[in-house]
Amino acid sequence: MMSPGGGAGNRAFAMTQIKAAHSALLLASNAFDAGSKEQQALLRAVTAINTIAGKAESASMVPAGLAAMAQASKQGPLTAAPPPGAMGPPGAGGPPMPPPDMAEAA
Image (tube, rainbow, N blue to C red; front, side, top):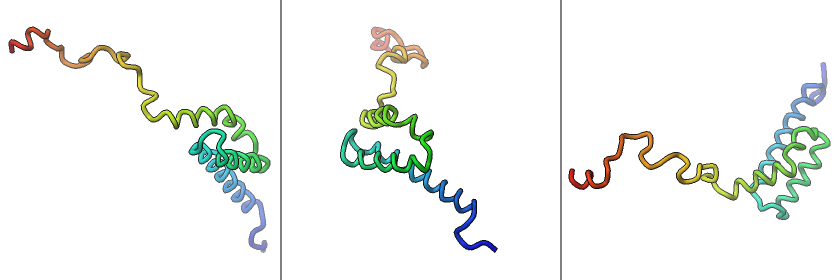
């Protein structure tokens, strides 16, 4: 019988928790202004955890991807909306609009 806390299963479970914490810290760092002391502290923690969790997960996100996500979160949800007029003229896709002089007569 094995003692509690030993074995490959516990190690795998611990690695799963570490990777989850790593991802959570990386995402939480986006809530702070770029370069702020809070963000820098979180990124230092992520860097320290990289030695355990592996660099492959975060290497693609830090620093360029992180900066892009931080910038996108500051701009708001409507930044991905197409510019005005890109969807066509008003009424496009709906019933035809009568000319203005006929609309007044009706």
